[in-house]
Structure formats: structure tokens, C-alpha cells
Length: 290
Image (cartoon, rainbow, N blue to C red; front, top):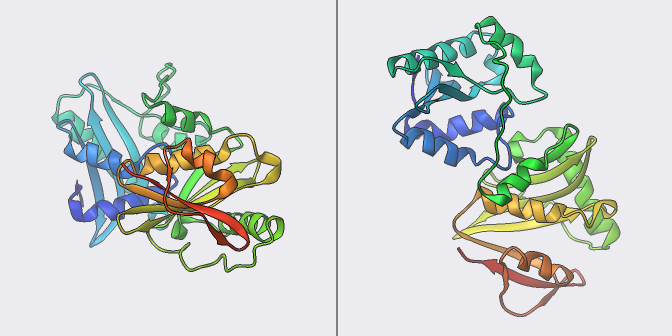
């Protein structure tokens, strides 16, 4: 069965998008979903197998053409025809609203999916898609993606073993080896369901990382690290921007190493309370109130 998304299915659909690699740090998937559901000319169609959400597609009409986004089928259910059925449902939804044509975009590097769309009759329209974010910070994040890497984000359950190993290895390299801090880095908070990990990949290597924890009243940025040979490139700034963009409202707090106070001040954080020592390094609690 395919029907329009209801509120109780939102979390399952967001998890599906993450599991199928559709999310990007500069796109807030929850905000995208809410706009689609609340919009007068857009919706999200959800495929069900019994009580299970197995697929989804976002569909919308811009007044000239119909578009689809976020076509996703649960990895374990791919090859069963759900993608084809979702596209047919999207076409029916648009046809009922008078759309003369449906268009879609395929990300560079995702050529494997072109055969699927070709089998449904979709072809190259001989146009080049141009665009820019109206928010300069979002545009900077989008521009950061390159063919061999860029900014990534995921919850713990969405990380591959290799991605998790690389993040933890970088944290150990900086905190334990370089800074000689003897502490329990694996504090049990990495795997909390609302913790989001951000990291920067380049040529198969993780060169910067951070995590954001959910706390009462907002979020906490922690475990911000950059490989020494890649410092000075603004990678930490982009990790912070990605976090602030993902959660555009609510307070943020962090415990900054004293020599990095100016880094966080650039993003609007202000010192709160006195400095304190942690593992032999002076720290300053900082807060961003929005």
C-alpha cells in the first residue's frame, strides 16, 4: 500500500533516507519533510508492507513541472519493485493535479540509478541544473563536497564500521597521543539515538570530526578534532556550521579548550562562567542562545 505520510511515520521515513544515503549536511531532512507535508502543492508518499515502512518519495508541483525527491527503498527490500511502484504513485499524484511533466535530478556519481530511471522511460533532458543556496553558510557547505570527499553526517546506527573506526582513531590520535589526555573517550554518548556525528572525508581518510549531543534545552558540541596536517583550512568552522544549520533553533553549549575560544566566538558563542581545568588543559564553557 502507498499513501501520504502521516505524523507517526516521520521518524521512520527520516531513518530510511539516512539508511539509503540521501541526506547531506547542508539539507535538513526533517525541515524538508515538514515543508513538503505542509505545502499546498507537495507531499510525501510512503510505501507500506504491513506495519513496515519500506519506501518513500517526495513529490511536488512548482506550477510548471512536477518533481520528485528522496526516492528511497529500504536496503533489504530493494529489488522487489517498490521503487517502480513509488514512481508510478508519484506520477498519478502529479497527473491528478494537472502536471504535464515530471522531472528529477540524479547526483553526480550516482550513475548506477540511471538504469532504473531509463527503464521507466526517463531520459536526459539536455539541460544543466544550476542552483545556489540563499543562505551563504549553506552554500559554503554544499560547495565543500568534492568527488573524493566532503562533509558527512550520521547517527551512530547509520555509521559503517569503517567510518566509526576512522572517527575514533582520529579522536585518539588528537586527544590521547597529541594532547596526552588520559580519559575515557568512549563515554557511552556516541551511540545515543539523538547524537549526530559530523566528519570530513578526503581521499578515503577522515581528517576532521565532531559530535553533537542532545541535552536538556538544546544541544552540546563535543569531540571536535582536526588532523594536524589539515589545520588552517577551516574544517572545524564548517563542522560547527553544519551543526548550527541542522538545528536552527535552541541553545548550543560546548566546553572549549582555552586556545580555541576565538574559533567558537566567530560562530556567536559567548563565554559562560570561569575557566576550568580538565585533563591538564584549560577549558571555557561557551553558550550560543537563539
